[in-house]
Image (cartoon, rainbow over all chains, first blue to last red; front, side, top):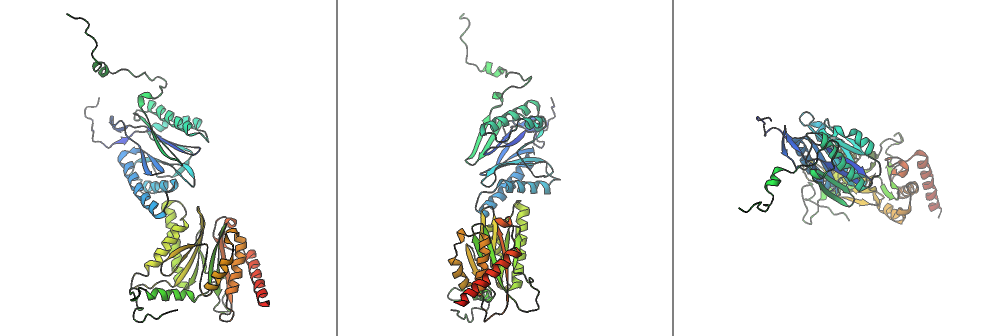
Length: 236
Length: 249
């Protein structure tokens, strides 16, 4: 173990993030591990951040960079909503993120996935990877854990899924990535956005399905030590 | 109806005792002295028409355009001082492209109208600027459907389904009110606008005029463009016939 660990090193979100469209909206998903080198700075972070009532963003890469970009865009979108007099569209949110990412590409290191629902286009997902490209996709993946998901999603994503099918797909995908990527872990968080509103769900890490070679969770010694006292074996 | 604001009308930064800013009212008079401009909102789009009074017989037909495209989906027809109008159009074009760059989608017509109105109003606030001597009719087709706005020299902007400014605006408004706009297509609207402009043109006071028309509708694929030549000729012919029938009575 590295005894000279610098716990004040820049926090990076190893991360697995994913956004998929389904018939009627979008489902965004992410793991919850924020790492500082080998140390897990936050094992239950929330990487799916709200921009407006109907648009959320999944953050990956540098935690600080992605937070500051989200904060700026939230601020711009708030003003825009007041000016236009109606909720901002997902495309506008994605474009604002893209402008910041591209103009500051030399200083930022963050990959983002913008997803939401608006009355004109319905559910939409936009991927904005490192350089500041903007690309509209039926599904998008990002973060270090996403490397393990390209083939899986190419096969598993289908057009016109129901809400439950889409959410199950997202949880399965993040869970698979967590199994293989050391920089992803913790819990799986999902956010479902459609015409009716926003629903947040939480899937604890130890309740996820076990994949190939994964071990059953072991009882920790702490459980045994903290167990209620058993009856005295002998009464001498 | 006009009252002279002696003493209170020298600067746009002076109110009169009865709460009026006379310079803005005089700017509106400049608009009232120009050729008529009409806009109507039909069920599938907007039609705008201008009565272009021809100053000299040596002018090339089709020059001195009074209707300008602001963006692919919207256009503006200007009445009043033409040079002032050019400035406003330039500003509107700039606002539209800037909005598209920042927000990634074409500027909503409502937003465009607000920005134009705000710019026109800006020039009524400072003594070292004079108000624009133009009235604007702005028509566009965005995701919320076709919309028609009018901006006055005071900076007021309102949404209309039929609007008219310039010399014949009273007569034009009466004619527009007779139309059943919600059932009319733009193709029919073009004929009606031509008829109205021919009708309100005062043969005695002004000699020649040229009719300029544009539309943005489903048929033009929601793009703002000049009315196609064949339809324009058809409209002019129909308008002349209607006039003759009227005269024959």
